[in-house]
Image (cartoon, rainbow, N blue to C red; front, side):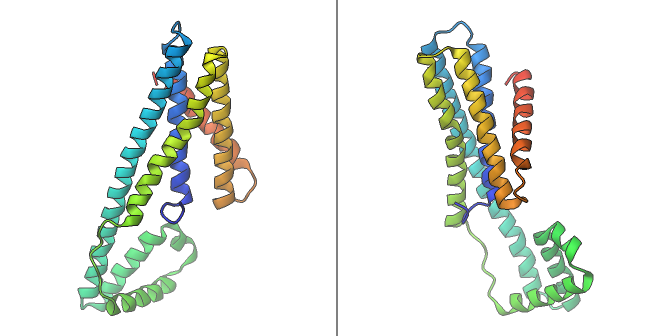
Length: 223
């Protein structure tokens, strides 16, 4: 998976999937008070699966478009560097491209001289190579597919838990779904901590707090 999407993007997709599933389960449970257990199970299951799948498809499409347009944006800048004859203008443009690619890292670590040397190296490499206009590639479509898979995967535990409503009290099932959601948020935070953080475990607690806060706000505003 991480050959096609970053750990951060994967975590964001799964977080949104969890948040949507938890929001729907709580909102629909309130809206369906007085309905039979069978109706609640059917409506909640279909709504969670359908909404998460739809969101995954929409987000996957946006991911493909933004990735392609970003590639075209850099292609046009690199083409200007290759076709230009003004060395100083090319150096400034190359430094601009590198600064955008490196974001805040270059501000904190690289001084002007280091950025200038990096720009010169980049210009030399660009001048030597043929610049091909980017097209939508296999990796971008696979990344879109992972957006769908992650959102649907976040929905499946809630669908499974709500099947217990046929045998248990609906309020207990909703509580179990919320507890399970909080646990998945914690482990999602732990995943981010291991990949990107210092391994202290605080990210898991932050993710639980943020998820529950967002859940309360969304449900209070009508789901």
